[in-house]
Image (cartoon, rainbow, N blue to C red; front, top):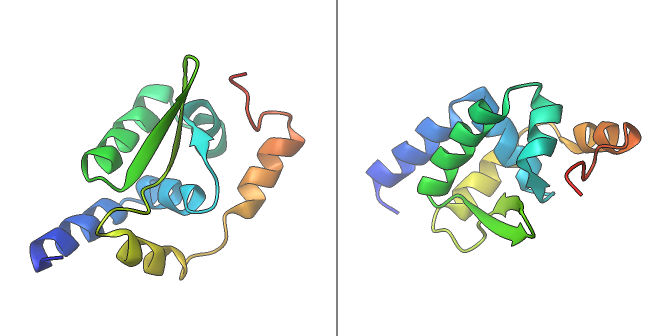
Length: 109
């Protein structure tokens, strides 16, 4: 990875919303509707952040019917860098558990 590529990754992760999304996706596959609920943001806003992460090849998508689920791209050159950043952040498991308790874990089924 070049210094410029590393700088681009850090710039993307410099946004709190994208950093939270990456931290969530490091351990859980999520659809946009789940991220909307967790982050309490609009779907277009979440989709814009997802688009930036996808363009940078940091996340992958998986289609299931009409739904798209996202996860970190473990094949990305920047994956070790992203993972090392995520490992220094507070665990996001509580947000997923809260979503499950509300019955919204996979709210798009």
